Image (cartoon, rainbow, N blue to C red; front, side):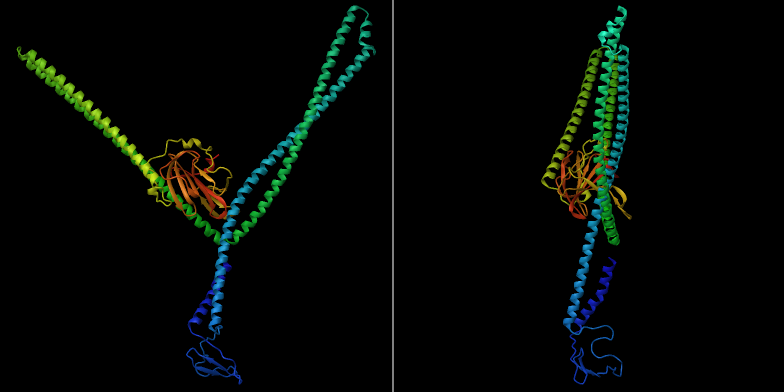
Length: 556
């Protein structure tokens, strides 16, 4: 890298000299004269002659002609043009080499991330195989010990059986069972001998059965041991193969790291650019979430204000009714008192007072009924107006598709997402892409594999997937924003209430701002990896309010 920059700086002065020479006019040098003198034509067209000995002219000590004493000046415009073209060619080649180096660096970085993920999986596989081999070896040892114990038991059982049979034969003096019974001295002895023969026969049958069962058990254990040994050999072969593959990947990783170290300045510049892109995405998401939170807070305050106004109206109405009732009672009392003074008009006054009280009571009830009816009608009209407003908003959204580039204020949703208990789904969310899924760039601040001095802060995770794979929503929600962000392609943000999910590096988008999505619904298609067009990639983030979460702890 440093050599290429030095090469450009070295050839630039030569190119400038060529341009100056072309702009100063033609310069020609004649052939040597027979007397050994040279004739040169100056820039003004006059001829000057110098001695063949090369001595300087007296005077100022300058050489004639347009050339200078230092450096070699081209002898013709064709020569200057040739040198200029050569210099321009060198510059083009240097630029092309720089471009190829940058492309190689990006390719190497992508390969390193992918290879590091494969090495991580390979280490896990080797660890699992080592555990399996160790477990099988333990099982083989245990089976061997069990077989040895059962073989010893079988030998002991056979020896005991053989001793008992020999003893029985000695007792009967090698006579048959019938002769042994008839040789009894009396009937009681004969009965005892019959019982003894029967018991011995039962014991012999039982021992024979036990020996057969032990033989069968040993046969099964030997077969099991053979199977376990075969599994152990297979696991050991896979372990050796996995270790060799892992070693090969480690060697490839060292090669990639060495190549990236040679382009250290370019790598740092590239990662700084990627970090700036990630920061811009973070800023857009934070701004959108802040706007939605502010809108939700304003709606909450408006609801609280409306509720307080309604309570105040009800209190005022109740107070008015109370005062009206008190006034009616006062009037009734006054009228009653006046009626009491006049015995003649008392009955009429009472009737009149009663009638007025009933009318006022009836009027108060009608007034209350009318107010309730008006409040109910107003609530229904408000509900109907909101419903029509939401329908109109959806129609406008359907008629006018969302632009690819939107500011956060335009992409903010009008209301919060459906009531989804997103927090309860931690660790059980599906992956946003079916099929192949390999995380190549983990979440958070971390150094690059085998490059501790190169640090990158990832707001989410980057996973290698098949190019064009369908990217799906991991949970039901409402689309809050659709953006175009440099380095991340098209980006979709879905609101799940307090939580948000972000889907980046999309080549196409299938949803629009304000639309509701269900779990597993398509939001777009995965684009090629910005650093490696040969592979597909998707960027995925999870936010709780304005706080970033590690997506790996959310998906299963």
